[in-house]
Amino acid sequence: MRIDMVTEPGDPQRPNEDYASAALPAAGAGGALVVLDGVTPPAGEVGCHHGVPWFVSRLGGALLELAGSRRDMTLAACLAAAVARTADTHRETCDLFHPRTPQATVVMARWDEERVEHLVLSDSALLIETADGTVRPVLDRRLAELPPAVRELRDRVRRTGAQSDRAAYVRAVEGLRNAADGSGFYTAAADPDVAVRAVTGTHSRAEVRSLLALTDGATRWTETFRLGDWAGLFALVRKEGPRALIARVRTAEAESAPARGKQHDDATVLLAELD
Image 1 (cartoon, one colour):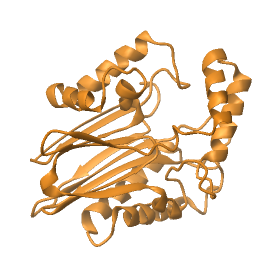
Image 2 (tube, helix red, strand yellow; image 1 turned 180 degrees about the vertical axis):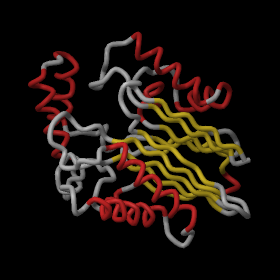
Image 3 (cartoon, helix red, strand yellow; image 1 turned 60 degrees about the vertical axis):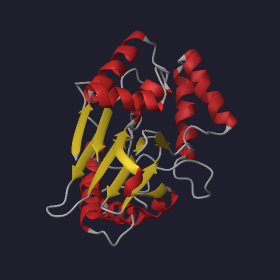
């Protein structure tokens, strides 16, 4: 078994809001991984004085501990418990109901001798390499499937770059994030009930060779710059390592106009080879 991970901030002058960790048990076969991508809030009031890096560190640490030590809990149950635990640490000092309270996307996986479990929430990704070499992406597509009116606002921002258009788009997206009626998309913030919205599943351990978890700063190689498909991305990481993928993304970013609000994004890649 081999774990290889790299994380790099989009701006070296700003804290990295991604989180990556993995754990292997002291005895027996198995392990767990956690990758989070903190949601960078727009400038202004956010309701919490701790900040996104603090939040992802707390949430990520709780997730890894629960996933690694509580085999009796599903990954969704681990996520719900970790969100509640993290919220309790700043409930008395911060406004957790503020739409910009710290939040994050989530990728989790856990494996033992019999099975491999996974969980994905929002637009980070998990790639599963099967025993025959097939690469299966596990994706939560709800953020990409915005209502037509919101997509039009997004496209207008990309065309004009106008601050008024950007502000309108931010408000529209915030109205869809963690919407109670199920019409939007979901991130891990302060409500443990979000765990039931995650994409989850299980594979037989014999079916899975490797796992690759990525934040959207790294999936830009495929989803933004179209430099290859998911299988090609996995092959690049397998051959040259996680750092090479991020380097290719940085090169593409430097050569392209920003398409999603910021030219460079925090990027994290975690490869777990189980065999």
